[in-house]
Length: 174
Image 1 (cartoon, rainbow, N blue to C red):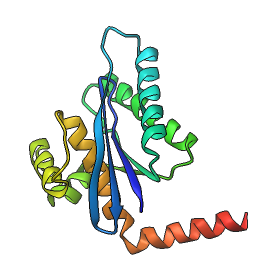
Image 2 (cartoon, helix red, strand yellow; image 1 turned 30 degrees about the vertical axis):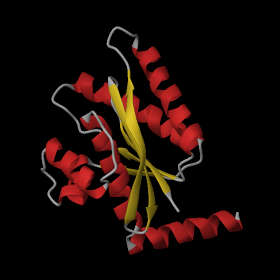
Image 3 (cartoon, one colour; image 1 turned 90 degrees about the vertical axis):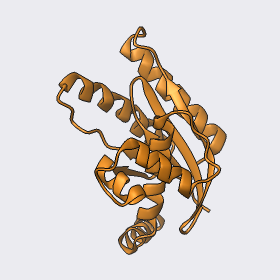
């Protein structure tokens, strides 16, 4: 049974959510937010995100992971800082040997709500419908669970299954 870790990266708040899946059936496992403060140097903030994700990986042992891609904002500095948080997430997931799905916000919203330009509150509502036992106090957690749900949908596609089988075959022959 795949256990998917979804991550909504951010330098202030990195949302995370974990679901267990069996095909299209999904069950909420856990979720939360790794918080930093603006008073901290960026290097320290990135370290907090790394350590938080390390704890989550150790505690919940996901088999798959997905990370939201960064949308380029009008403010280039904001985009760069988001990219740094996303880079830390990709680094630790890669070090853990997890295959990582990466999804644009529009694709995540479309997978969850059916409409790529849905509002965050609509995503939060649908996450609660799809995962009735899910607990989240912040939109960042709902967004991360949305990333995990999107990845689960993607994992059901024939193209994904063929690519994964090919990668496994290549790993065995190496």
